[in-house]
Structure formats: structure tokens, C-alpha cells
Image (cartoon, rainbow, N blue to C red):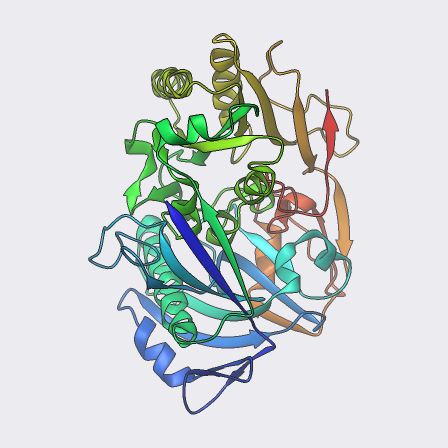
Amino acid sequence: MRLELGYISVKDVKFGEKTELRDGIVYVNKAELLETIADERLAKLDVDIVHPGESVRICPVKDVLEPRVKVSGSGNVFPGFFDDAKTVGEGRTHVLRGMGVMTVGKIVGFQEGIVDMAGPGADYTPFSQLINLVILADKVEGLKQHEHEAALRMVGLKATRYVAEVSRNAEPDEIKVYETKPLQEQLLEYPGLPKVAYVYALQTQGLLHDSYLYAVDAKKILPTLIYPTEVMDGAVISGNCVSACDKNTTYHHLNSPVIYDLFEHHGKDLNFVGVVVSNENVTLLDKERSSNYAAKLIKSMGVDGVIISEEGFGNPDADLMMNCKKIEAEGIKTVLITDEYAGRDGASQSLADGHVAANAVVTAGNANAVITLPKLDKVIGYVDAVNTIAGGFDGALAADGSITIEIQAITGATNELGFNRMGGSVI
């Protein structure tokens, strides 16, 4: 598949009488947007705009998305959620670069996060660098948690598609081309270079811990070979409330640095042949099934090396190690990407599982590290959630408005796709 990404650089986002893109500025008709995303499961909806450097704290964050729209080619971005399940990953897609759509509101599950747009907390999240259209959404009384998550997920998707339409007829500032040929062709294209695949493990530990592939709950799939360009077109989206630091938001999936960096090296020092999407289910039987199948797929692809990432920690560490040891047993080299929960002093065991075959590991940082965030001038959402969310604790919110937390409470702080500002390598 051959995909062109046309990047339109967003200079600013403002409310206006008409939703449009003009002179690099995205104008949003607030009333029309609220009407578009209205949902009977939600009692309150509001929209705000925040900029990098503003003294604003957003909490608790559910998801972050990036406006993208299909201009040509099959299907639409976020396939399967809007009566269109055509495959994506080809043609032309326009991207509003520099802005995000963020959902926030009353807590769904305890593993939600904080985004500070200024101060020391801003250094730990990539989303402090975006102009964010922030949607505050609260549920009606009595709505169950999984229904609350589903409503918020659809609000984010609807809002993102609505905003993205302004870029359909725009002239991109930059066009980048990504192509992966059918497997048999791709394997032969660069005979002198090592053939590399990517095992992309998605969080699927059950209610409030799910991801979606073409709108299918990924805990129900067997590992599946897809084109990397499908991920760029929204085939994978987030639907989970795992710890904020290592959650892959939908924005992370759309901009996965593992995929983009492999493309940057493609044809130069490696041959990037494809992506195997796997899952991280709860039971041992499910883990064995998925890791066995992933190893079988990777072997059948005839590759020399594999990058394996995980999402989450603890239980998913077992999936990471199973994928590693079974693929290594086939004579294929692996490199793992994870983060660590090594205790506040960094002296504890970093992962819940390990294996001798896991001898090439990249870490995205220690999520248990503690930070104190000063009071900011404005809060969007409910700051008292920091006393409850993972990484916070009873008393995390001080009387002066400052917050003392582990960085696992900061959205994207130790992201296991490497989409963060921390890290290092362990061999």
C-alpha cells in the first residue's frame, strides 16, 4: 500500500462563526461542534482551546486524537466506527499537524491522566506542545463505566472527524510518502538489507482496558498482519484507561514513532516488511495462544529481526516476554520496548517478568519517579482526581493547589512506543 500524508501546519485554533481553515488557522463553530458530538449518555458537554505555555492543567484526560481526513483512496479515517469498514492505508490523507483533540471529564477508571500545558509537568507529556481542542464530557447518572468509556470514545472520534474536514481541500505544507508492498514483493525489494517486522501489542485486558482494530475489540482477534500505513490511517484506536504514562492514546497510534522511524530507515539500512498486531489478554491460555500465533506469523514472514512493544505494565510484561522468547527460538533477533516500575528509588525489579532471551531492551523510563507540580491558573476537568488516579494518592493534592505524584499519572510520560522525552537503553 502507498499512502501520502499531506501535512497542514496549524498556526492557531480559534472559535469562529464558521468551522473552516483560513490562513493556517483552524476556526471552530462551537455550537455546531457540540451539536455534532451530542450523546444522550452524556449530561454535560463543553469545549475549550488551550495553547502551549498557558497555565492550564487538564485532568483527568481520557484520550488525545489528531485530525486526519481521507482525501483519496479507500475508506475513511477510523474505519469501522461510522458505517464504513473498508480497509485504509492507501491514497492521500491530510493531517492537521500541531493540534490535538482531547477528551476529559469525570473519572471513568482510576488509570487516567494529567496534562499540564506549562511548568515542569509539561516537560513530561508531548501533548503540552499541541494546540488542544479540549472536550469536557460528563455522564448521566447511573451510566455504567464501560458505557461511559464508549460514549467518551465516540465523542472524541466524532469531534476529530468534524474538525479534520476543514483540511480536505487544503494545500499541504509538506507531503510525505510511505509504501509497503505485498509481502512477497517486499521481501525481495532490498536483498542486501536485513528484513525487519514489528510486533505491535495492544492493550486488551478487558473492560476499560481495550483497544480496537477496524472497530473490532482487539482481545477477540488472533495476531494479524497489517500494512503499517493502515495504522497511520486510524485502523487502531485507543479505548482504555490504563496508567496514563504508558497508555497509547489514539494520537500515539496515528503517530507511532516505531512505525515512522522504521520507514525512515527503510531502504537505507533495513527492509521494513510489515506489522503484526497482537493483543495482551488476561489469562495464561490467551497469552499462550496469541504469542504462539504471533511467532508463527513472524516465522512465515521470513524476517531477520523484530521490534516488539508492549502497552501497560505488570500483566502485559508476560506477553512481552512470551513474544520475545518464542520469536527468538525461531532464530529471529528481537528488540523490546517497555517502561519500568522500579520503585520510587529505582531499586526494585523493573518488570513483572523476564527471560534470558530478552537481551536487547529499550526503556522509556521509570514510571514510579516522583514529581511535584505547582498550582496552575486554570483547571479543565476535576483536579481532585489526582487523589485517586494511578500515580496519585490520598493527599496528593495539597492545600496550596500543588500536586505530588508519580509520573505514571502524566499522560504519555513513559510511553512504550518511545513517544516521550525520557528513556535509555539496557543491554
